[in-house]
Image (cartoon, rainbow, N blue to C red; front, side, top):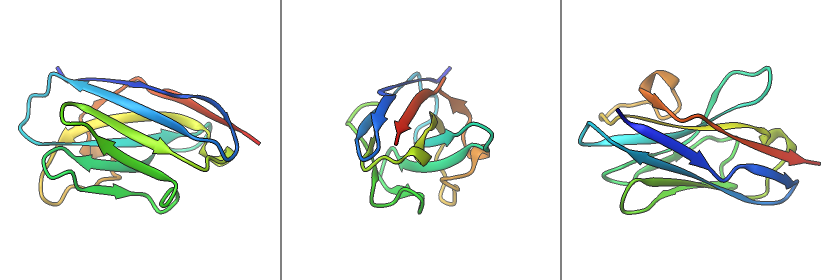
Length: 125
């Protein structure tokens, strides 16, 4: 079964940066998408960004565009670089994996079959 392990969360002051990592293993499909989602207390889980494994195409939510960047190495680790963090970015951040197909919806939870355990990001004002 696919395994996803997030790391890199923590406490940071407003304006600071963090880089989250998602280490993925045991993939069972040829091409896949890795997405980052977040869930703040009392709110629904929302999509932040995603990257396609094969062509490295990416998408970023409008709420974080210009501040967050998704990337991957040549193996199975995906990163989320988060700059200019604000208190409203405070949430548990999850990475997720799903099979790629041409019309997948990067920000839809149902597109992703596997989920990591999450990593807490707290931004103080």
